[in-house]
Length: 275
Image (cartoon, rainbow, N blue to C red):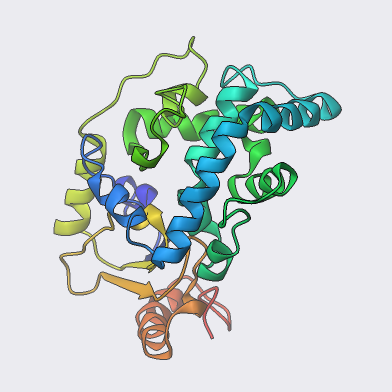
């Protein structure tokens, strides 16, 4: 979709899946509010309980993380330390859980009753927050992504009130933490408002497909043209496709896209994810 903004004639139409629209990076209340209301109260409380259990056990969790890094030959030079990487992962737990998993997964959090073993918590954190992503072998490949978040697209805030007294790194989830200090970063406050304004006023032949459970679209794009659409998958996460839409919305999407596909010599079965 961002490509389409600057090269509008390269394609006949655009399907943008789970596209975030952080038009004002100084105001993140929509993301915090989303994470405080998504799913059920039971699931949200379970995630907070797991966070509150993991941070006091950071010494034990850190030892497991360091042992994994040593065994795999990995390091933490980009973010600075395994301890900071661990705190970043714990802080991102609610976002990553709702983005990548289902409501049933959120309920099945170890330690919801404050009695989980450290091994169970570590294994769950590794699966949920993708612990290897914070170590250098993966973190280096993600530097361009974090750089763009920190200079153009912006980055969300996360709820921390329930973790008072347990945090050590105020910038643990900031893009700057994932970009080497010798790379300068300056945020362009006009980049995303420009994209947002283009979508609202000028975009056409554009289809957004979002999941209602995906925190990435807590601030979704809104269209202003008759042939641009935003369709939602109830309970869907960051991995939604056209195939996940309700039958009525799926038919609407395919009806809108097929004439465009014929213009590019589409084959049977286009668009991807369609019926």
